[in-house]
Structure formats: structure tokens, C-alpha cells
Length: 133
Image (cartoon, rainbow, N blue to C red; front, side, top):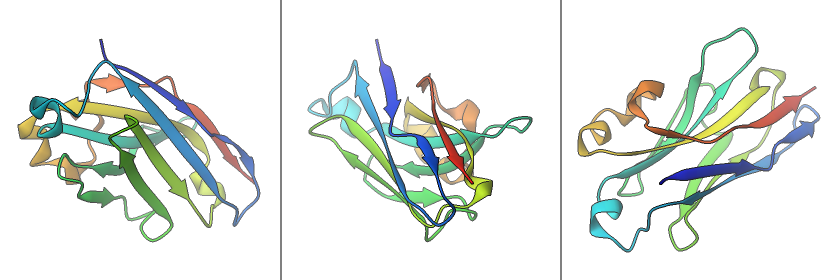
């Protein structure tokens, strides 16, 4: 049973930084079936808006970013700790929202990760709030 638990959210001033973490359980990268298919991502949702993709990391380690965060956010993954990170710098009020970690194990999704499409992901965390003011 895959579980994702986010942490690291909080309130920060404009221009500040935060680092989000997502600890995953229920799978291991020591299994080839996982290491070859697992994709992880960060999404966010502001009040009254749809959930949007922020960044993804593919099974091979390649990354994709939304245009709005390119150059400011960095997604990374430590497979030895089953942990996903999102380093957020130069934060803006528009970055405010609930941030969710997501996972999927699918070769077909890997081909369209750049779409940052929420329905492509099967597993979700409970979210961590980020407020920039």
C-alpha cells in the first residue's frame, strides 16, 4: 500500500525559500519494476483554482517544470530514503497554495510526464500548505 506524507510547508515572505519533503512508503527502488516505472511529482492548488502541476521527476531522473516555476524551483529524489523534495526559491504570492506529492508506476505515463496532468497519478499525499505574503 503506497503512502505519501508531505512536510515542510509554512508561511514565508516574498523572495524567501522553503523546502518541501515527501516521504514515500509501500514500495522500494531496489525492485527493478519500481526503479524503471516510478514517476514522482509535485502539484499545487490555490483556493478556488484547479490543481496544477509544478514539477515531475521521471524514473530515469529527468525533470520537468511548469513555466511559472522554471528557474526558481528544483525537484529532486533520494531513492535510498524514498523521499522526494521540492526546493522553492524566490517565492511569490502566486506560489501560495496546498502542495501535494504524487506518484505513479506506469511506462505509458512516462511518455507524457511533461503534461503535468493530475489524473495520470495514482497516489497522493494529504498536502502541505505554503503561504507567501
